Length: 205
Ligand code: MN
Image (cartoon, rainbow, N blue to C red):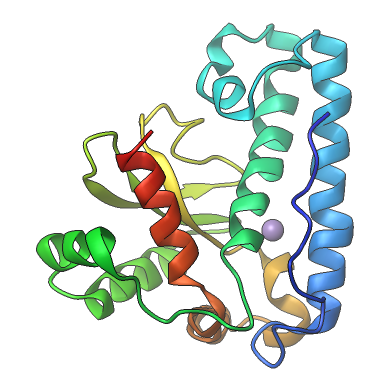
């Protein structure tokens, strides 16, 4: 059974950047529905025991009648776990160690990386995500995706480190049509310590 991560903070903990009503709906309704629908789909497809990364990375091996449901709901399940996990009311506003070194080497600075991710977030037409990911050699990549796709389901052979949700359900209650204001606010609650932990896990599998 796939399960949503338990939030290590309350629905109101990310105020004023992410409002309580959005958190309640986003985690309690949207993410819960993706998770339930994924569990239903894998049960029907007989794939209950697969790890989510293997499932999303091997969609071409899933029977065609179940593939779209598993792609969309599996992505919705996985992406939101990553998203909510990296948010914190006590966020570290910068990574340290190897991740910071790598960011500086590739992008010049953390601010420059954040600017690239912001641009991708705003440039995603319609629903989707922006990503910071790593390959197994520890190289970093930024990208965007539509709907609930992610670097794994797109076959990019990269491990997502940070997920930025730009579906309207992530911001519309508070920010209405102003996605840029949401993304700007979101940086205040993105915990780079969590991103760093994920990068360290890639380097030391
Ligand atoms: Mn979402």
